[in-house]
Image 1 (cartoon, one colour):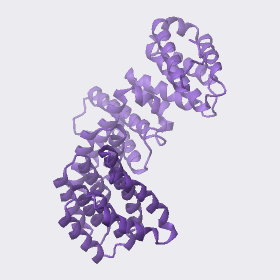
Image 2 (cartoon, rainbow, N blue to C red; image 1 turned 135 degrees about the vertical axis):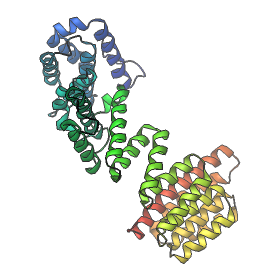
Image 3 (cartoon, helix red, strand yellow; image 1 turned 45 degrees about the vertical axis):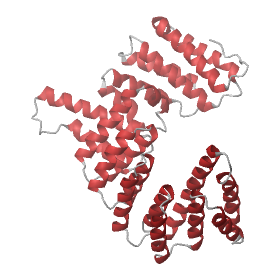
Image 4 (cartoon, rainbow, N blue to C red; image 1 turned 120 degrees about the vertical axis):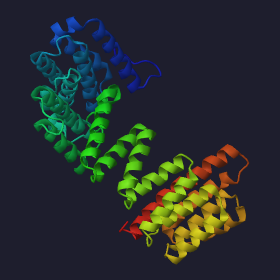
Length: 398
């Protein structure tokens, strides 16, 4: 288990190889590690010395977090709270940052959750519940599992809520309403522990049932689903959101983009229609209709939405950019060149963007079809970011 520099290997690759070596050693020698914790963690420190000064304190400490979790996972003594605290104390002494306890506490709490010792897991995790939604829902999960035990032990009726269930509900609601970010503290655990993600979804699903009018729970779930690339959960949550909060622009916007990803033009058109019904004076829904026409390259649809955009006062430079985009999508070179010339003569604040679009237009009209497709996508992506921000500034009520 050495950290020598290997030709062509990045710092991350070398650290990953070292971590794998330690994991293998821990799996094969867990009793020996348990009996000599100070010696073992001293060896970890020595193995990281060759990485200095390349390795940051964050990377250094995260390495120890993962090693600590592995020690606890493999140990037969992990159900002993005194042993857990001993492991934590040795790991904390080895770390560099002032908040060294954070990752170690989370590792200990996760291990106790695995052992179904929810009572002792909570104190390790509770202090971080408002810093990471994954940890916050993990605490709620502990309370919820304890509530099931309370019901069984005290022979409560299913309708009778236990104290632990009330704590679980309060915790879920707090996570939803406080806008707590996802994965800021639990990144190393989240990568390795699928069951932690399952605990998250159990509490989000339960929370949606407990608090049917709480938008924050659905938004939190959508953030996690997008982060994990979980399209099935995105669809399920958006179905609930659109049914319950049909006039919420955030949910309508998310649903629109998901349908574009699914290449569901009819579904996207339906969302645009719903947006226009709920926000008849806003420009953003009109833009979404225009964007759909850019993707489908249907001239009549584009002209219809453009006429509506003019009537609603869409800024002239946005209209020009959209006209340019449509010309590029249908490969109308004369039309695109005319618009580009006009854009470059406008105020200096737009010249930089016109130059970028001119470069992309060259690729769109080039002979290389693959390059042309990439250029079209780049045009649409950049235009989307530019237009959405501009239109939100114009329609701050949306």
